[in-house]
Image (cartoon, rainbow, N blue to C red):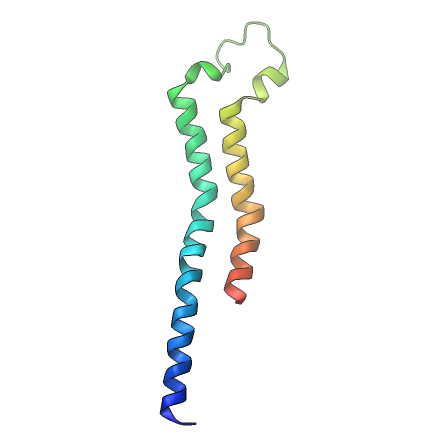
Length: 92
């Protein structure tokens, strides 16, 4: 094997990993950013969370709150979707 072809292969492999690295960073950060956005939403609009004084509301009124759903969606995306996508990107 000549040095020229070995150098070309290494340069090609380095350029292939650069786009994958920003994709990996994006996938790793999407779930936590969504959960953080839900927490921020709950802090900015605390009246959306009726956990302290539900005034006779049922379980679903307490459980299904938009900021809480955003936090759960971000966590579920991170655990179930992002990890599988990261493994697929690492195989390439």
